Structures are given as structure tokens and as C-alpha cells.
Image (cartoon, rainbow, N blue to C red; front, side):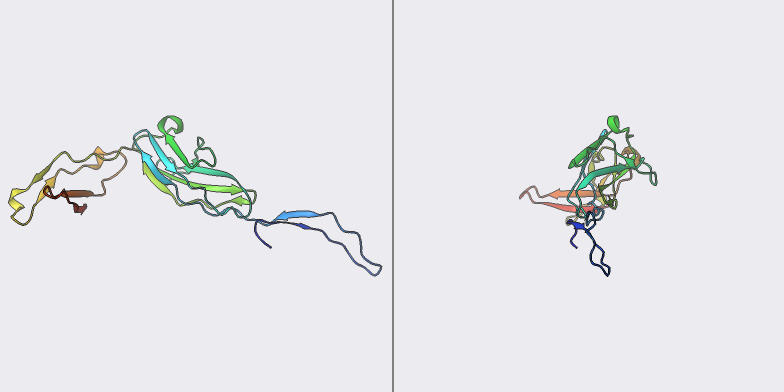
Length: 193
């Protein structure tokens, strides 16, 4: 039997006298629940909203997907997932907001989603975690440390951005880009914590 194909069945009985009439028919679609959806992707975030990209490309299990469901946790690690009631099933992106979804600035939210067909609920996707916060601000100044610099090396310092100054989490690292003023070449001089 092939998944996604509907089959019709009937039967009859035979004894020493002969065959009975056929039974009424029964039809059955060969199908299972949809497969696991891909993880939602972060498209944009600021202090008021989080925009997610959603890919509805899924193995439907042989039966048409009747709904896609987006879930969010309460903004606290380990809190229960609840439906995002503002999401319209099948949309390829969705924006949750402080106003429409009662989000709280500075909290870190986790999202996942799943598909449903007549044969069941697909496995939840992997999760994406997003802080409802602005991107961290750049440090205010970079200074040359004369005592540690020489003709062949340059030592630079900058003021670290503290986690408290950036709602939504710790600073994970810094990238320092350098540019040769003569030829315009740009390279990464530092990438780390």
C-alpha cells in the first residue's frame, strides 16, 4: 500500500453452497501524522516585537495538513508552552508583540511549532530562543594602549558592555574590525570574549 492513497475494501463469504453477496464497501486512506517541521528562524527583534520565519514545507504523512500551530513559553526557562493565539495557520512569518501577545521586555522567549493532519499531531520542531531586547550598543570608545604597543603591534582597549546594560542576557563576545587606510582592506582583528 502507498501512503497518501485511499483504498476501498469489501468482502464476501463462501460456504458449501456458494458465495454470498459482497459487503458494503469501506474506504481508508493510508497516512500517518505529519513529520517534524524545521525550527523557526529569527527575522527581526527589537524592544517591542519578535519576528519569526516559518517554513511550512513538511512531509504531510499522506494526508493534507489541516493546521500549523506556533507555541511560546512564558519567558522563563522551563515554563510551559502555550499557543500563540495571534498566529494564522499557514503564514510563513509571524510577529509577536508586547501589545498583542503580552510579551515583557527583557525576557527570553522560546518558540516551537508543529503540523496537524487528520491522522495526528506531528512532532514539535526544535526550539529557537530569542530575547525581547534591543541589539547591544557598541562600546563608546577604543583607545590605543601606548605602553603595550610597538612598531610591529598595536594594543587596543575598550570599555566592556555589561549584561545589565543590555536587557535579555549576557554579552557573548566582541568583534574588532580593522581597515587599512591606504588600500581600504578590511579584516577581523579580534573575534572572541
